[in-house]
Length: 267
Image (cartoon, rainbow, N blue to C red; front, side):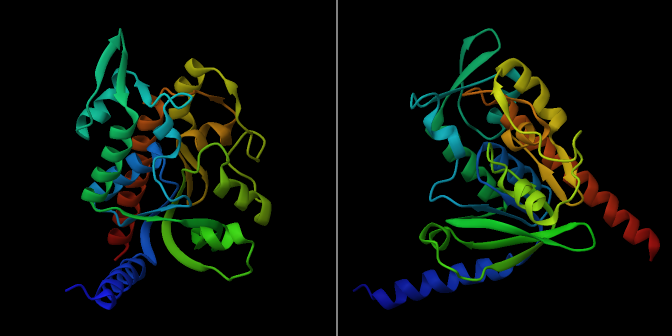
């Protein structure tokens, strides 16, 4: 016999417990595209309390559709190494070009991030940031359905030591900070430079340089990095996206260790 009340109670209790446990975390990743998922995997594996907030029902960003709904993706040798680590299969196509099934890649990235300890909240939009003394200190969240319906419902807050904008082309988090706080970003103009048109070679070459802190406490990764610092889009080649996710995780892990060491020395 199935008791529907027990089913409902189990879902509500477990989700509420997960959300309550994530109201104060080390890293809030905004966007569950490929770079956000890779970042969350490495961050969680390093022991940092990490939660990913994705506004859509599905994770994976644009990776699901491959190129123009031909659901295959291409990665270079360096990106293949990350897929290998995450047990996602690839097939050599040509010199330094490898193919992967887009569906397998998304599912694999999500699975490994969760197994590493990251928590993923889909259907949750990041609409604003928490700021404290000229530093990003968390995110402001609401149900995506509230946003879609145009309802005026006050949000909730999640405090985080570090926030990552992994929202991709729209750079939603960076733009919210820029719009509401009128701050100067760590970009040449002090504002989001905007994404340029397609030039895969330069976009891939510049994405790691652009993956960095853009304002105290706020980092950018993946297409958010190139859109923030004014570089090119790349299309369905995903090596740079994967490497960018790993780099932003490495930067935050290093910063976290330095901050903890500083605190310990001051005791």
